[in-house]
View 1 (tube, rainbow, N blue to C red):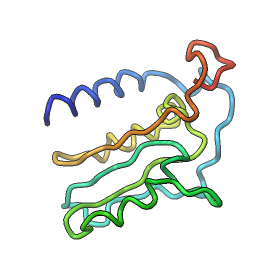
View 2 (tube, one colour):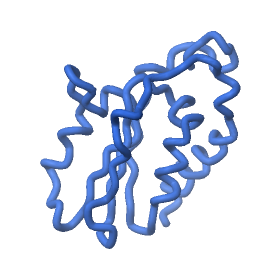
View 3 (cartoon, one colour):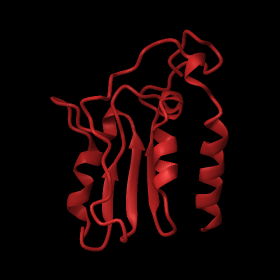
Length: 129
């Protein structure tokens, strides 16, 4: 595992100590969005972590939902785990980042794109941060 990928994983792993109980506000119910899985588990996988700008939640269109068309899916999986209405913190506290970590294997990649829902002071429980 290269050092840049390791640094990113360690940064997110340390943030994973945040608990959902710290943020009482509900987020978008993702029950209607089944967790995408790799079509060919032996191939490398490109995971996408993000908010609605990376995931299509009709009628919106996210770039992550279109990305697979640019890859040879016989050589790599593209798995979009982004979900609308998530900040970086709620993606972590919902357990979505943990599910990506659990599925990662050597040779996989993760594209992370947040910011759209991250405004506010993360220490303020009333902010969406």
